[in-house]
Structure formats: C-alpha cells, structure tokens
Length: 155
Image (cartoon, rainbow, N blue to C red):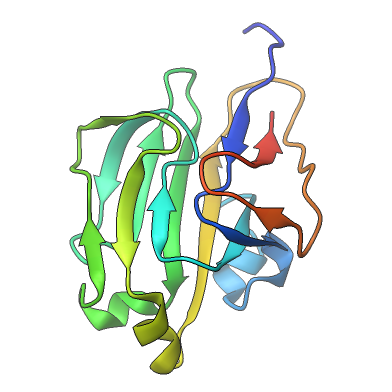
C-alpha cells in the first residue's frame, strides 16, 4: 500500500458534527466504526467517495460503499428514519452500481422529517479502513461542509 492520502468528502451540504456528538449512541460510541456526521442544510446526499454501491437499504435511508483501495463505509441519513419505511426518500443508485464522489445517492424530504421530529444528521461510518497512517479529521465541529467537495476525513 502506498502512503498516498485518500479523502472522504462530505455527503451533504451543512455543518460538520463529530461522530461522538451524534444523538444515537450506536454511532457516537463508534460501535460500527469511526466516522463523522453532517447536520444537513439540504436534502441531497452525495457519495463521499468513488466506488461501488455494495448495500442499499430498501427504505433509501442508508447505503454501503466500497472503494477500489478497500475502504468500506456506510452513509446513513438521519436517526431512526428507517421507521418511515422509505417515505420521503428517493434513491438515485442501485446495488452494484459504480459511483464517483459527488454523485447523488438519494434525495430526501428534510423538512418533512424535521417536522416529524427526526434528527436528519447524515452519518458516515468507516467500516473498514485500508492500512496506512490512520484516520485524520481535518474539519472542526460546526464547520461548513459542501457535498462532494469538502474533505471530512483523510487516511
């Protein structure tokens, strides 16, 4: 493995949230892995990396991606939004599809979810990270993020 640096971009426009501050203990305690979240200002969720869609939940609230260098991650839209059964979510990709960083994964009705009391944080969990220098998080809490452009994690 070369020591070239890889980047994970913000999946949505909004404000950076450290994973430890996410309102769901499973994410905050890093039970599935390290990562970060973004409190969204839009309802358009983009792929934070280029790779293959290896998992797509039928409800459209979560996607698994794997990069060519072995990084595996989940993009999870909101906390407990699975309870909506897919209402308000419009998936734009299918399992097995290749995506480029910045490609739209899903659009969701942020206002409707907020109105129903959901936390709409878009959470990125790193499930498997290739060997290397380790995960670095250059963004600070509250920092403005731009979907598919702002770097949230490097490794």
